[in-house]
Image 1 (cartoon, rainbow, N blue to C red):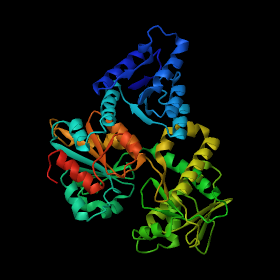
Image 2: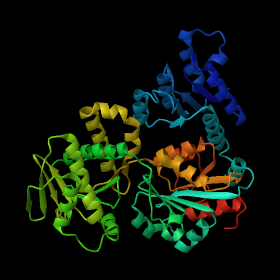
Image 3: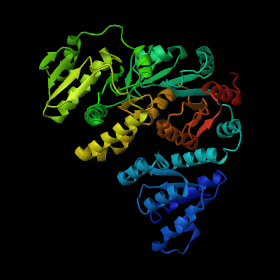
Length: 500
């Protein structure tokens, strides 16, 4: 049974339409007001909780807040698989209190939808995947996609294409797809070095900020982010650097930056193994200190006060926006000219950039990254409340701790730009062509918003992965097709009738 919750006064016809989608999957929709025709308004929530307790799934719409907070809390207590939906076009979007609660509890899946059609499509697809999980994965794929599509579009990240077997074997499997889209956090030059041999038709760099096409020889990037997205990165970066400085006060903090063009990625006190791996991507020659000084001054107009050996000392701007700009371009200078070379930043009455920090330091872990991100969010909430309230959802999607001991601040998250990428692909195909978009997951849970969004889109979509995929990703609709990426690709191609 599937519990359907919402504002029973305003959303009853909407809940009934959701129920029709649930019936299409072969499950029983439970809407409290339909079960109790003569129930009094002040009794509806108590009775609905009794119904919820007997359901395996719950879909709760929070577009018009009423008593859903209580239902959501009980979903956690009852162990119900929960999907929380809300209208992306509604003026208030998702209520902030509910967003914070879900984030803190790690509860359910957030499903923004454009209209009733897209929501019903999501329900029919993802509930079906969950409902028929006992079937063989190949049978699930066949049931979802129906007849063999004419065009196969592979969407994946650069990290997936780091094979656990010979590159040629993965390359051969990837070549069976008609169109390849690779999403990466790296700049275009680094990306081409890593995945150029997969002959991608589209490279989406910086997690979705810039789109490059093979037809242009990857020479002209299309900007997918706007000026306010860049302002977002600058503002969050300032708060993050303060949080890093305050974390484990007195301990050495070493930063390494990668050559992204707009977004930011800080490797923070990485273990020697990671540092050695990153060293392979360094620029061959260490730039002069004057190169760094000229770049920062050219971007910000701020002149350094003095140089002490490898330390460049700047006056700390009084205006927070000017300070944001200076700190942002200090990072960019290191990302561009000193890729993956260590440095440190100290913010006091002056801002000191040290290009030769101590080589010995306490290595940090993924847990450290998560704690620093949490402290950054707490700092923004306390000191920049209006910005925090207006950008709460973006902060959850774009300020990300990563397991390889780094923290990303993205101009755009993958799910915020996937529509633009898909539309670009579709625009270059014949309108009559039957297209299937296939997302190959490496097991990163930050991909869940993208997967959920694609399942609710008007396009035929499926997400696949290996046994490394977590239970949360499986509930979100990722179908496990093998013990490895190679095996998952191989089994998928066999299932749809393409010889791997």
